Length: 88
Image 1: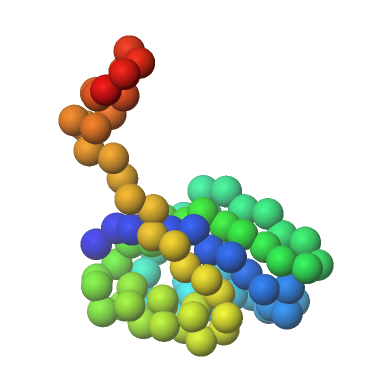
Image 2: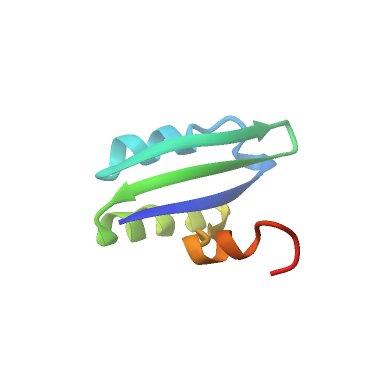
């Protein structure tokens, strides 16, 4: 399974290697698409690939650390075609 997600990190995690922990402790591949972090908060767009059970464990870990997760839905080719040329 592959899923695209948006993460919002609380500032309390600024000194922790949360994404590194995911890579080392769960049997998943993590690709960072874009990210930004400051001393007060952070966000990241990731693509995660792995079996469903491992992905769920990774999500459980993230939520236990106070990270908010938002799944990003892919648009189908039909939806993308409708968006061309103005009014769907």
